[in-house]
Length: 416
Image (cartoon, rainbow, N blue to C red):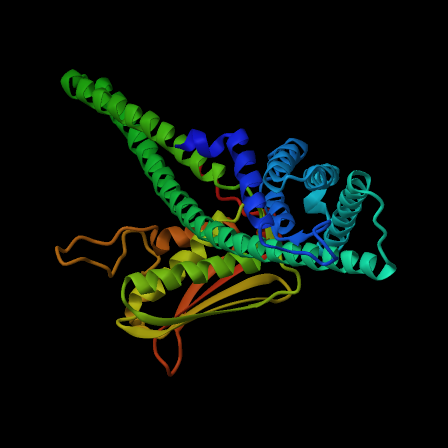
């Protein structure tokens, strides 16, 4: 079935048949049957615009032959051949023309094809003179049907582009969420590798001490543990390299600071809907120069996790406000929510590794990058993160300050 749809010869026959059917709906503007105006031309033009991969001249020949046979008129067949030849001259440049210009070109092709058809009629049936009024009538018909089809085609194309843009936006958001998630997991893994390195070094140190004290059995066990840890480290390095490649491959375009904020807000709106919470998430960006960043995952990871934490801190309904502005030295990011808030006695330890207030019904702590790793990313920019009460409305207020030079250079967080 797919082969039939992709068959060019079959497609050209379909174009010719549809044009022939459209040509049956016609009017005769002049006396007698010497000339007629039908919907075949409009149908033919619409198909040519949507099937640019087809050879226009061959399509015109097939269409002309079929119309000549059905209408018993060689001149009618010649019309489509001339029309297709004219369209073939601009086939590869159709996208370069503005609709108004394209309509004018198609009008000229239509009018020239009509003139050719009339000349052939005159040669075959004898001299037939047309008045200036009749020539103007033909020209007006060419204008009307050419611009009508160009307008219809443009309208359909715009709707297709809108649908394509919406699908691309959806894919970009999914891709950014995956990339930011991979970046966070890579940081976790790098931290684990640093821990493994320290344990391995301690194991070798213990091995040397045990061997020095002639505790051979214990020293052999210790070196075996160290070797196993070394293997775990190598496996972790391979996994980390794979993760790095995955999220690096996602970076195929640059994002501005405003776009990063927009994707964070839109993604967390969907997250709140998934959690069946009625949360109003708003963003406010006030920067003099909207940075365009190719390595946006670190910053997006920070903002995404702070806003996601705010979503989780709100029970059923509430509001989250993300504000971005700059002062003389820093870019400042403020995430304020109307959730439960953080008790004063916990504010000093919420950034410590392993700290969490999220547990499921089985008592298992929540996963995610965690505020400790958010702080690590912020520090990689040479920045600072703090939490404070949101004010009378309750909730929390996270303030992230990142020095301008470090943000512009992309920070120094390396997960390789």
